[in-house]
Image (cartoon, rainbow, N blue to C red; front, side):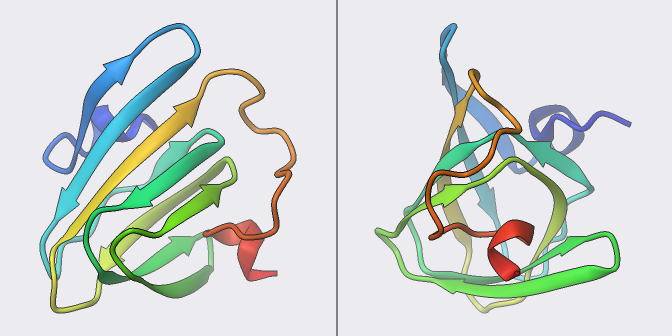
Length: 116
């Protein structure tokens, strides 16, 4: 199974820009959609819509509700997500190609590390 979300979940993720330093992904889903497990390197996430979702990693999970126009740091992680709200999700991820998997430099993240 591929851990790259573009390969494992092509109906939700698409590459909109890529160079040697970053890869930019667009993510969309509908209420009730669930992704398969995948991995993200250190990333910046910008929300284009307001939404609620559950992030699941291993036996742990976290529910988040984000407003449109929110920017967050996303430390490198593996998870799957579930749209548990009543609105579609529309997000842009800017994945960093350098330092993937390193420690986050901000505490305002989303995902497993932010839940502790």
